[in-house]
Length: 253
Image (tube, rainbow, N blue to C red; front, side, top):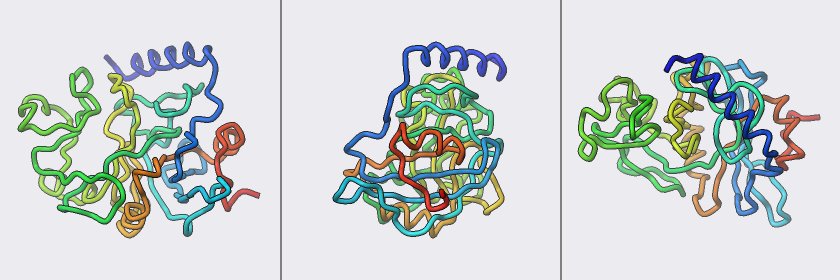
């Protein structure tokens, strides 16, 4: 299926879903941590991340100072997460966009045997892949060739040990972002937070940062606090702030 047809089909599905009403607040009351990423527009590749934690009064309080991130090479499009379907451009496989919305944060991963984090951690080996091949029964899933066979990862599947397969450290430390949790074919796959190439080098659709900021993020995150990621352009963030009960950013007046 070509890119334009996939995009059209996903847009039609989204509009149909939209007709059933929007979820007022997709942030669960049990969620105690938010990693909030904002960009200046839908097409910007750079943004900033602010961490928030609920205090004793159930209010969101910023933790530390904002840090720089880069996102997809073509900006943002609506993803599939905890929020209701939204009107506008939808994330599809291969579009170079990071998914916008609210997403659970899952397992941490990397090249090291262990890292300091309150998340579950999976050390990757040379046989670990994330499947981004449309039509695969393993689409948007982490697999190991010891279990699924080498044929299952043929194509453009993401090797999780990039130091071995691509000679870079982008996945030395990372976190799974639960975009497209039902693994809908063609709706976008293998979305992570990981290390960047540089402050002006975008990703294929993930959110990337300096290693020091990743270390701080991993150390702060706690799976028992049900951490979430919010990623939106600033204008959209302002529009959704009241409805989704999002924390106020320092840059807002």
